[in-house]
Image (tube, rainbow, N blue to C red):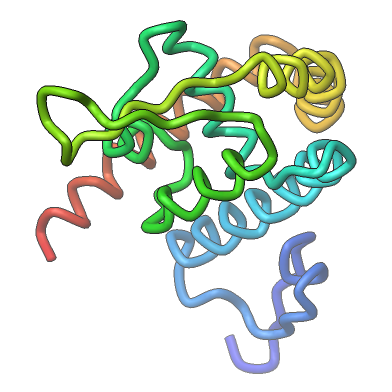
Length: 168
């Protein structure tokens, strides 16, 4: 239909895009990336007040969950929410702040075990409530049922993305 323009959606308006998306898939990907960026900014604002980045926060949470046994560096990288090729640099910064400690494995000198320090546990303890409040603030408008549905849908998107990544 020549001359007929569809109404601009909220996403198009936010990013000042006047042309329609080429497909629903393209619009969905842009909406997902835009949403992830906005949520990341909210959460970063909380942790940066404690002098750490969101990725450093993620490493500290992983190490807190590992308990006293700690984890090898590669395992930390595998568990991170956002893949990061610079796990060693993240650990360097956290160790310099006294939030983690690393030890070489006596049996295999190539393996390094990382553990959270009492200082790291203290930082997390101070962030637990503020991060929970930030998460609830971001997701609060959905309610429990819609939040559960969103989690299911995102599980499906990640599964499809893994399939797409393995076929390239």
